[in-house]
Length: 381
Image 1 (cartoon, rainbow, N blue to C red):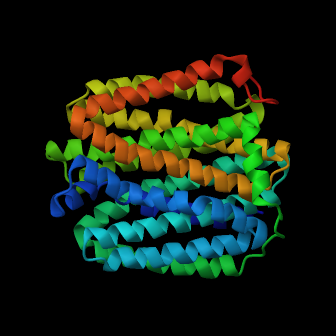
Image 2 (cartoon, rainbow, N blue to C red):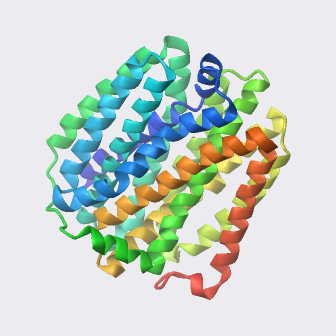
């Protein structure tokens, strides 16, 4: 079990590394290819578009090919996409590479998490999912470092290194024992969307993807206007994801012991405060600490969300792989809409409008969680 958890943790870490590596590089690409805020948002969201497209096929693949083979498909796509990103000579090539990286990520995540759940005792699932999420956040932490390194040594050299790491992961996964496929029709997974815990969990994956999607477009561009370079922006997001890395395993233990909704409600209040404060912040001295706070507030939804998805799937008799395929689709929706719509709205009405809408969404979610009818069955209040 420990070897498998380490493997899956490394897989999701490398996936998120590639995703967040673009954050400190965004001002450079926006300047090089003359991208508006809306154009930069679309460029960022190509990864999420790939994840959304691959999500349901990835979940279905876990029930037919098995978790191990699904992970191998995802890793192979990720490795090829990293090579494409390294060799791309224009913004279209970069965007297409990120698109296929997103598809590969959906396969790696659905297969990897299903692999862990199939091998884990029920009473430790929250902790193990929290560990996997902590690893994913650690990868997100290393992403800005990779982006900053790419700003120094060049994009080609940095992402050729990622390609080598991806090839090594393919070999590692190929030598790890798999588990039998949990065969199930796709229709069963779609019908399970009526289950309350699963619906709540899926929204708790969509919401932070939306929040961070807006943040990773607007903050780097704003800080760049104030003279911040690639290394400084990378360092800020490095510190932010460092806080998330510490937070997620702790949240996993809390959800196992005390239920899922208490930390979710606290995170919603924190997210409202952070979003409203970002709407009024124009100087780096205010923006930087608020970005750090967002790592705690926005990042606190993922682990309870994953636990609810796993719990809801089990209640509905749905294969875990299908449930995590739906999870990838929801993350893809949030991460696709966040950068694209946030960048477009900021370009038309200013950054404040985008942040205030995020605060409104979090407030509406908090109100919904206070209704007893919204409480997931079997959870502690």
